[in-house]
Length: 243
Length: 220
Image (cartoon, rainbow over all chains, first blue to last red; front, side, top):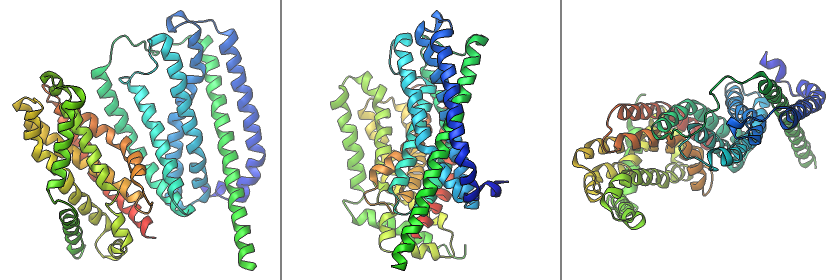
């Protein structure tokens, strides 16, 4: 099945309309969930009043931060085993978008944390540390690719690093959880207390779906740009060779 | 694996380079002693404070020592062509990578283990903590050097890759640093040393193969 989609011509034909369609659908869904979050949903005093509306950006970006690293690892694996060039393009495109969502998760978390927990940053919260480490994994991946002098080398080095990082992610998560359970202060308010009422859950899930589709649209667009760039390189090389 | 000669050669060459290229065994000892000496100057000289954070500072020193030596781990071999010869040997490349990593750990990581009693006593560590701390530094150092070896192999063909290596390796150091610091903490010796040993074994199982894949890439 992978081979069907690995054909760049078919990919270009498909993504030509899929990328803008995803962009429009994603923006519409995100806009609806933001409108719900900012004007419709009642505020929750237990989570710090109006500031809890940050959840509708914060939680989807946290999910996407985790999911995008898994996507990066899977794409790297597929490229490393089967050498499908589109998988490498996908990995290359996912990295900056995933890093962006990770940064957004950290930023909205800090903004939400300041009025509710009284601090921008807690060094002893396991989830914050996990997301921060994920951010560094993305940065390292992008820095390594940028440092390599050929495209092939960048793809191979990036794939090795992404796979090594992916097998380490469960270990990192486990160790950070152990460490935080020792140092954890009891005052931190946990979101996973009572089950979330549907009035919050529906905009949250729709928003998450919107961000997922938006993420797909950005990835497809970057992949298309990469395909065009490679085609341009081939044309240039041909011109130089032919004189 | 027909002949272990390249493995012995890689190990011996790394040791010889470390011996010839500086003050020999004195250099890492001086590094760790200097790092330990800075601790009272930077955090204050009260005994209970030193005992509380002294071991943690030595973990940072150990991580930095591994990162410092990783930049040249495979770069010199790549530049003078040794790596290409190794890649053509019948003996698998991951064993040679392991030998190099072990050699660098022996040169730059083991001295901290041997120095732990001396540094520990000056940093007011209780005497019954010295042995667990030595074990933790030994195991943790192996994991640091293994992951550092992967980063060093990935960045072997990158000129001035030192900072890149640090960025690649530091997230991988986290589990070892956490379990190691918990295992070396005064008073609480328990499952943490086992967790530390497990994370080190994991590093030893995964890192040589990743490093050898990265070395093949550097050679091509």
